[in-house]
Amino acid sequence: MNSFWENSFVQTAGYYSVTILCIVLFLFIFELVTKYSNWDEIKKGNIAVAMATGGKIFGIANVFRHSILHHDSLLVMIGWGVYGFFLLLTGYFIFEFLTPKFKIDKEIENNNRAVGFLSMVISIGLSYVIGASIH
Image (cartoon, rainbow, N blue to C red):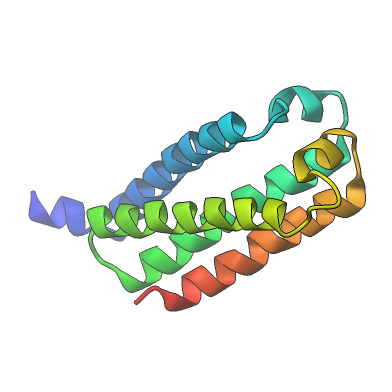
């Protein structure tokens, strides 16, 4: 039975499945902390929300990518993913704090694409910093 769990195809399916579940969970948490409904706004064609959400998805996936590369254990991979998500979430709040002249959530909800793009780039950029620190 050990050879089954050591099979590359089985391991890839496991990492993939766990990462997808974590992305869904983490997006749900992001949904709770934003003042707008991500999926309702995307359905309406709000490009700013789509960019911000896409950046979050990319950021989470990139953290998991680095975690998978540097760890053999599924539990350790999940641990780093959760920690990376916490850091991305913290980055979101720092971004909001550092822009006192306007509210990030309000601008993104109003389809301000410049703010949506900046939010996306921050999520992606931070995911590279977080990923680089995983070892």
